[in-house]
Length: 432
Image 1: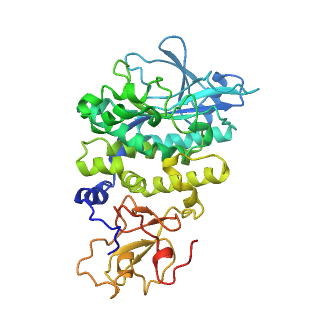
Image 2: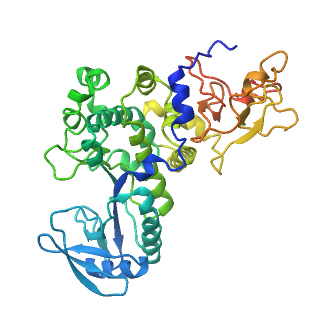
Image 3: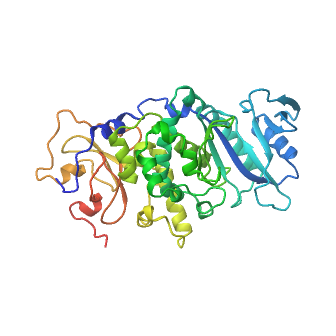
């Protein structure tokens, strides 16, 4: 066996195989709220609310004085509405003027906020609003952002809020360089979404990684949000009425596919943080491969979206430097990522297990990576462990030779980088 291979901790394999086993994923039931910043070719907010309600077939509320609102109906009518004790608007989408955006002639700057609902109940609204905004010729500029608010109320009641917040802080600090590559350069150095990782140094960084969750939860806001809410992630204040974890990194958009995949990313990362981590998981978050960590936390669709978007911005802005922690993305972008987001799959003629491949193979002679490097071509297993693709997708690796991202049937946790099939198989093509 190659020298870089390492015995995989049982906990990591268990997480890999069972995290997304439920057909109704828990993350999709988490309550979430969205904020879309945009410009519309209308003279005022009232006109925008009226047109959006009609085109989207949704009720839209506009805030008036105090706790009063006007609700614009799809039939063109207007109804009064009062928030009352529940200041969170769970019944309607809300539209209001946004003075933080650039002024554009003959355009109105808006912030459109969704109802606070479980994501699985909000997907239809997202499609309807996206279609309406595109029909009305909504515009996005560099000053626009897209924010995701994840509700922490239920976690507070279950006394799991402190564990979730600290775990999310640790996970975000580790993945922030990769997520910065997924957004345009205008969001990477932005006064409204400053990075959080650069603020952690020395003793503060040690406290985040090794401090007890109960005590660290009180300090996360101070450590990662020293300039208030204007960071890539905004942690909740204990004295605020609403307890939401806000991700502010994404650029403005009105496209439903971008909105839904980014919300899925945020919710799936949060889901991983809802329970205390054991030592293996702590090690993986702190020092493990960023690719392994990402594919453990999110599903195949989200992983594919992340890399395709990162490669898009690398090619669009070739002179913009990436963070050092993800400089490997530049070489990986030269090889691309499957357009469908899915890898080719085969049944190994040696051991009988299912495995993915980054290149086409013959079904009659296909061998997995392990059997390919055995003198006898591998021995047929009486009960193969891997008979189908894991629900969250195949583990991803970075080729130590050509820099390509490629899949494997099991995660490789070793010091040396593995090599892809093109670089290591018989008749390998030179990647120099």
